[in-house]
Each structure stands twice: as C-alpha cells, then as structure tokens.
Image (cartoon, rainbow, N blue to C red):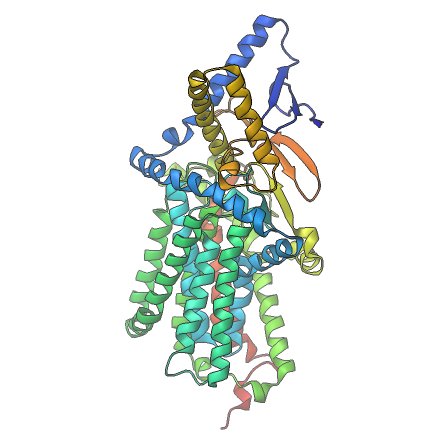
Length: 562
C-alpha cells in the first residue's frame, strides 16, 4: 500500500512517500536541482536529525539531564509489554469505556463538581478534596516538567483519548492516577472514621465504589496507551501519600489558620506563590505548568475564602435538604455554576487587557521574572480576548462540544498511532538512532546475506502473526514517522522543525504535517490564571453561599428557628 502526502508547509518542499512499513520513509527535494545539491540536502537533514538528538542535553541542566537519562530506560523497557497487553485486551466496548471514564479523573470534572460540595452541606469533605487534588495536580506537574520524560512510544502503542491536550504533556508521573487514588483513599478514610454516621451497608457499598473508581482509572491509563507502569505506580503512590498527609495533618493546620488570623493566611498564600515561582522549566513547551498555576490559584482562593467565611454569621447557617427541598437545591447548584462562569468570562478578558500595560511598566524597572516559552509584554501589543488560556475549566463556548461528547462518546474519542508531541518526536528520533547503531553492529556480525534475509523474514512473520510476543512490539519502537527539517530552515532558537506522520485508527487516514506545538503563551497568563481561579474558589466557598441568603427560595437562614 502506498500513501502519498502533500508538500510540507513552511520551509523546503519535502515530498514524502510511504511504501510498506511506516519506517520506510523516502524523501526527495523538488526545490533543489542536480545530484550534488540533492546530496548536500540529504546530509543537512542527517545533521539536523543528529542535532535534535541532543535536544534535552542542551535544554536541561546537566544534573537534571543525567537523572532523566537514568529514568528513560524504564520507559523504553516497559513499552513492548504495554503494547502486548493492549493488543490482548482491546475491544470497541473497552475503548469507549476507558476513554469516557478517563474524564472522571480530569481537572475539568473536579473543577465543575467540587464547588457543589460547598453548596450542599459537605464543606469539610469538599475542602479536603480540593487540597488533595490541587496538591496532586501541582506536584505531579512539578515532577513532569522536572524530568521531561516522554509517554510510552506510539507505535507500537495506540493512544485512545477524548482529550487532545493530554498527549502534549509529559508522561511521568500520571496525574490521572494520582487524582483517582487520592480521592479513593480519602473517601475510604472518611468512611472508616468514627464520626461517620452512614449505615454499615452504605459504607461498604461506597468503599467498594471508591476502589472500583481508582482501579478503573489507573488501568484505563495503561489500556489507553497514555501511561506506563512506572507512571501510574508513582502517580498512585503520590496520590496516597498526599491524602494521608491531608487526612491526618489537614485539620491541625486548619485550626492553626483559624487561630492566627490574617498573618497565617498571608503566609500560606505567599508559600503557594513561591512554589509557583520555583516550578521547574520544562525542556519542551509542555502545558503542565498551566494546570499547576490554575490549581495554585484555587488553593489561594480556598484558604482566603474559608478563613473569612468562618468569621461571618453566614457560616452558622446549616444546610438542610429536607427543609429546602430538591427543587431549591437544584436551583442553588445552577445559580452557583452560573456565577462561576460569569466571573470567569468577565475576569479573564479584563485581566488579559489590562495586565500587559502593567507588565511593560515593570519591565522598565528591571523587575520582570521571565519564564521560558512565555512571551514578555514588551514583545507583543495585544492579546486575543477570547484566548483559551487553559484546559481546566471549559468556557461557555465549549459547552456544546461537551454536551455532544457526552451524548455521542464515539465522536469525541480518537485512536491515534504516531508521535503527538515534541517529547514523542524526540524520543522517536532517539530510539531510531539507537536502533540504527544496533543494526549496523548486527550487519557487521552477519556471516552471510542469507543469514540477514532469514532475520528479516522472521521479523516480518512475527509482526504479522496473531501470536505476538512483547519482543515483537519492541521491534516496532522508533518506527513513528518523524522528519527533521534541514539546517537552513531551523528556527531562531537553533532547533530544527519537526514533521510527523500520524495514523488515525478511527478515521483510517494518515496525516503528515508539521509537529503541532502549544500556542503562543503570554507572560500575563500566569497572574491571570492565579486571579481567575482564586476568584472561582472564593465564589464557591464564600461568595455564592452568601448570595444564596439574599435570593428568595435559595437561602436556608429563614428556615432556622428564631
């Protein structure tokens, strides 16, 4: 089968043709004339490819690069076993199930669901969940950017997901696993607490549901090809440790904040800001930092809001489902969600419009704190007001797509084969270079052409056989289609352009295009996210509960005995 692709955009004109295996890539240049120029071009491509193999050595400090190199063999070792497991288990039903249930471990799911806890009488449990989830997202993102480790290679893995942005992140450790395990462990600890008033049968059912939820999410990350064994194991350990710290040390810390007034709260806020500032710089343009900043903002708003709310008389008004009725409770939730979305839709464009002027003034004083991959205010004039600055909480314009994804889950699910991010592409190139060196060494050791032919025949039959072994999938690693641009088309930062070939299993088509990188990010986005998400948390824990008491039919204060 032969698949042809259109000329590559931007830069020299490549005509790519796949004939047979995806690794058999042939490139020729229509823009150059003569054999000599063609030879020079090919040499330039090889040189650029070799230069890209040193990407992480140049992008990371030596001590971080050395740690990354020590961890990388684990990711490569487990990939064939993951592919073998995926082939053994895959079915259309499981594809849909694990792709859909993965949404139950996302930031979006928790950001929409957690505020409801504070509006329906579960403030203490809700605050504990916010602490463990925000900590899990922040610290897994911290480690992801620190190590800059890729996800397991595709091919041989097929990646099944309903989120296009997830593949742009690094793989180690798994944030989904940390979130799921932390929630399950926290739920089990609360259910087993002596203060829990649930009936024994109810406790057992909820505990079983917690275990099933965690196991389903963790196994789903392996099944969907998004993470490896090491990713989910370390992510799960982190989630459990974070929960144990919150469950046993959270209440004493809460008491300390309440007893020491504004000084303790300000100290907590400054600590969170410092953690944001020391977040490691990634080697690639990874969106992990964006998620960490959003949840840091949530923590700031949560601590300020809960501390101030407990000082007000509104904190003494209990939630009573029987007195309010289900209709009033549903209206409370709808009103609260409406307020949160209005705040986000108003605050975000306002911040993006006003902050650049302030940042330019700060730059003139020499006080700016530049971060890699973020454009300083002095280098741009305006920011698009409808800019999508994060993937944590959907905007109003995203709601129709979310509803469609829920009603027709197969439409939102994609099954992709091939590199999807810069980390994927660089790992594919690195593994391909390793295989090339091993192949050259093997060729030199062959006794005859007949022996080489036997090896190739054995490899072909093993790949096409139904009885595949993990070692057969190892032979497919590094076969993802990545083309490196020649030296004369390199970018300003001395990095070559990367082009990838990707096969969409659902659409039954192959795409060959320049590597899709995250959008341009602006320096003001960090402060914007901190303010917007701090405001969301404040409205959830203080603003909306107070507004309830001023809206007829939503408040519970008038139901209390005088």
